Length: 130
Image (cartoon, rainbow, N blue to C red; front, side, top):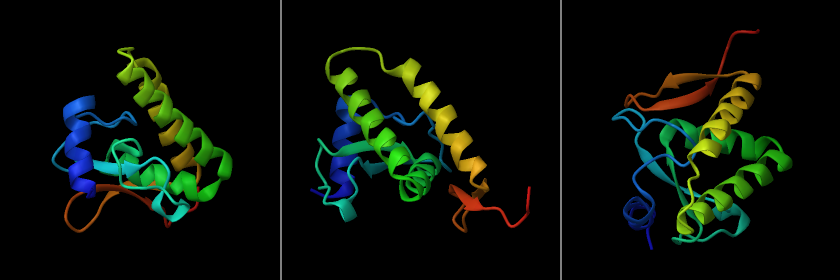
């Protein structure tokens, strides 16, 4: 399967929303995030896929690459989120707290929200000292 095929199936089965709490816009579109990254042996499958807005996807990778405990937390959160959806439970309260955690941790590492050349929202390292 391709990332696009997995993303479209997830949008159909799990709703077209960011599982990491972001707001979907034309500048922050949904992407397919591998729960277990490909570089760690993760496959492009429905089971290993999650939906994330572009900015939140970027933030998740910043944190996952920074610290193994943050990586484990993100993986466990996404697995639990998908499990709740499949069991017809409401994952939205934990989605909001996860989004606050993600945003706080990315900003504490010196990243700021920005736009890349095509206008998409991303996080980039600030050139200014705090």
